[in-house]
Image 1 (tube, rainbow, N blue to C red):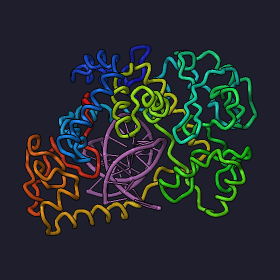
Image 2 (cartoon, rainbow, N blue to C red):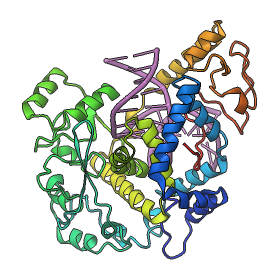
Image 3 (cartoon, chains in turn red, cyan, blue):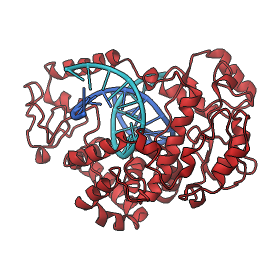
Image 4 (cartoon, rainbow, N blue to C red):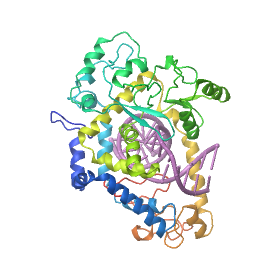
Length: 402
DNA sequence: AGTCCTTTGAAGTGC
DNA sequence: GCACTTCAAAGGACT
């Protein structure tokens, strides 16, 4: 748990994390990040425009970023990884949150616990596809070092099973008239026993973490149908009686994205998620430790709740078969070694026909330490400092510019 | 219709 | 134990 406030001066890697930021000039950026929005937009737009004008390649921006990210110090990532690995360790659960005493108390979502309906603070995001999302009130009240209401309230209600739209309405309060505004990521996990065969809650609100089992596209469709009139949902279900999938609980950054996406969209008038995510990634790094702690805490609760509700669930359940993926990769590799023209090769990887190497790594010659003259001749193995990964993201630079 | 892109973090896999 | 991979969200772009 890297960014959490140590409170009493313990170090969980959080200090290291911050030091790492400072070492890498992040501090300066943090100051500058305050004047984000306009610059984000300007940078992003100009980069998009420039790239499109120069290269007319849909991957031009990606290449540029990869070029930057290529310089990302592994050390930093290790910090993150190492720190995150502490998260579920004892430190996290006990000492890591000296300022969060409620963590030592019974989980609010345990069958014998509950939370109190005493807050009306809520952020409601109108998703572009029409789904309303109720977000946790990320007020300081909720995430103050000693949330005053939580432990007390939790202890007041006992023996009541968690009914999300009521019990959680305190902690995850609903806005006026916001009946269906339940976020998949904010802890709205009704008990599995309360769900119907396709993840429907008795209230008629489908469980957001449960979606049909047929891939991303249907996830979207299902999401869009979440608040359809019941008979529509019913008809849809009859048509597609597919095995529901329990989705992963959202991590801190995902929760942050969910909350801030609409804001960024509004500020930047951007719609492309990839671009928005870049901005959000930068903003995430610009957050203070305390601000991030809100989301880490929230994510922890999410995981905890998820674990309670679906004790047998494993992230592996949603993995596409490793073999299947490997086959896909191998197939791609085969096609890369398949004789063909450099032109076709560049086209396949969205490279500029004039300026780009046609190798699978998409790096432009100018920033590539070991050029791929042509994929048909085997590329030299990636160096530890620079790994070319065409299908997965390269090491991320925490201070990469858009 | 399906996949990619882009971000971070959690968790799984494989050595 | 480490490095690597997959998946969570989102929606436009691309195949």
